[in-house]
Amino acid sequence: MSLAQWAAGLLLGYSLAIPPGPMNALIAAWSLKGFKHGVAVGAGAMTADFVFMLATWALYRELLAAASARHTALFYAVGAAFLLYLAYKIAAAGPPEEGGQELAVEGPRREHED
Image (cartoon, rainbow, N blue to C red; front, side):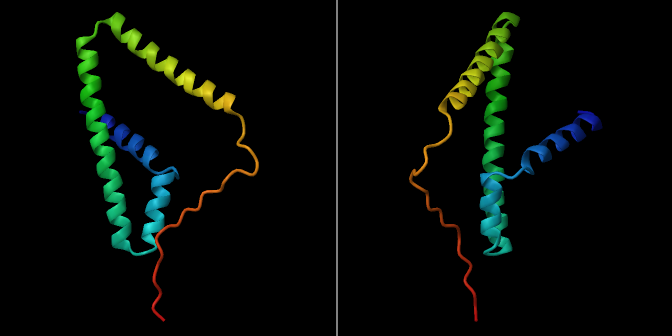
C-alpha cells in the first residue's frame, strides 16, 4: 500500500466518521456525563464499525473472486436496483402525518454536586 492510498483511506474514514448522526449524538450525550463515558461509547461504536467492515470486506472479496465479469455486473445491477427501490419507497411515502405520536427519548443525566 502506497502512502497516497493510505492517505486517501484515512481521509475517507474521517469523512465518514465526522458527519453528525445518531452515534455522534449518543457519544456527545454520554460525553456530558464524563470523558471516560464518551470514550467508552465512542470505542464501542468504532469496534462495531470495524467488525462490520471486516465482515463486508471478507464477503465482498469472496464474492468477487469467485465471480466472472458477467456475474460481477449482475451483482452491481442488483445492488443498484435495490437502492432505486429504496429511493422510490422513500419518495412515495410522503411527509409524516400531523398529530402523530411523539417519541420521548431520554439521554444520560449528569448528576450535579451542589
